[in-house]
Length: 391
Length: 249
Image (tube, rainbow over the protein chains, first blue to last red):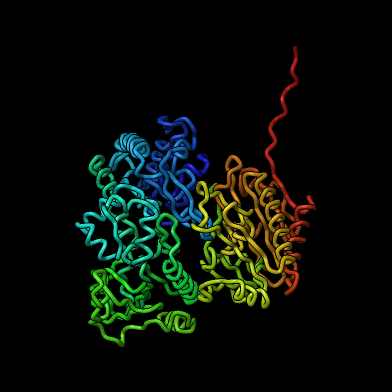
């Protein structure tokens, strides 16, 4: 990834030559909205030397390099224009998601993707960039593709206060009575769910199911944004967030990411804390993942984070699930299939007992393939697992 | 010129902490109320996350502080700390592994850092101040180089790039080790720096003394102070504009 706005323009040529000498045939560059729009609605692609996108594209073309441009919201100090900082609607994301950000338990505030001023401003910016890109498309120019990456919004913890959350829950449960049965609550309508206090209740009652719904809701809301932008700008290719590896190595460790936010490179994680609400299970999940990944790094093993388990790939993989007593039904089905195809399950803080409808989980899985409870505090057990995989 | 520094990886972060002698035994906990959010133990064998305990009350805290030094980062309830905007962390926050960055940042309104025993905390606060002064010195020129040496350990060159006083890049530059070696021989001059970087450069050297168990933080603090107090130990190349011609009526 080359951030032309962060390299002095006099060095662009050298950077591109070096890229080519390193054996690359192409370069990926981010076009950051905040860098190009210092004043609201006024975009600079030609005045300031570091913002001369056309010059950069021309240099890349002269070096015979293809260029993939990336638009969107990557974690960078120039992601958002300065004027967006004063908008009423904000989102919060773990600070660890920001480039070189705080690794401690801090969140940071960013403008909300669901603020109409952000939507309109960003669409207008994309329109201007795409107009410019048309002139530099291959084969006449170097641009081979333009990506759309919603970046930091994949870790947005604030969406429960957006009307889209209530809509999602209505679609999922159809009837408020059905939701009340699952969460053992007494909400009168779906609209009353869109508050922090309501979501805290859901988390307190059925933490795993609430976090599962929260993440699925976020995914669906972001998908809608991507689809809308893709319809408007058909040349944009959406970037999908990284999924767990489907690599061929049979010995792999997977951690259920329902309670985790994972950085796009899949290297670091943070507890999933909707609206900043700290849930003990999310913290436990993070601490197990943090402990395992530190050991795995030492042994040269990679930990994968995943929310979707594909049974046909289980093999000898190990999956760690930190949960309470309740799991969503579809997750239970996936876990049964996971063990049926050879995978081993670990429930460090105890196995789930019921599905979301309070039906007891009639575990149709090989008990030998499940380890529950006792390993929670046993550091040796985790060490041996990592060493076993590295061997 | 493309800045020839490599991005800071998890491994280089840990190596740097080790080189600076920050690896003596202590624990660092982050808490929210009684809930222990994260715990790590920093030791000679590296930084190890801890699975236990899950919660921290006064009794368990007393038991821990009696055995080894502890840094305790407490978030104010009910939510975790929310920074007002994406942080622009200090250089040390960027290049040192967790929890060292945490121990060098100024306190926030919603989170406070406590040290046990307090005298150990004072030593950390002192070193944080020295790091901050060193960062300011590195930011005086477009390129700031810090040659880190310690007896019996491989030396490292930390390169920091600033554009209009804003840090854009920091990393290690193994390919430029010969600059450090030239400095050690007393052969590094402004001209060599100009040839290498083609811009304004400040080159500093930090000789880290042999680390003994008890006073490693104080020793580091003194070493940085020495680097900053003796200007002749650094090499600087600055572009000097032509003086203005005499103004005549």
